[in-house]
Image 1 (tube, one colour):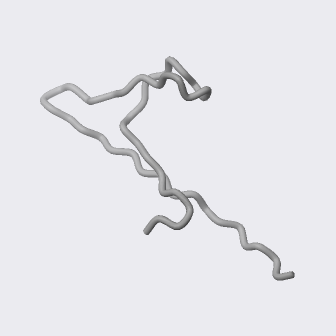
Image 2: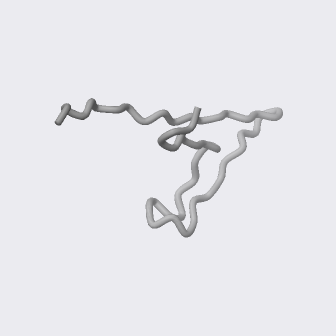
Length: 49
């Protein structure tokens, strides 16, 4: 059986500014850091281009 290679996850964060303001979102119902503020972000699922 071939050895599986380590795969690095790809994550993207976006900084949206208007004037002196930056857009943030607040995490909820994720089970991970709920209530924290963060930049809009996302990641690529296995098989996505």
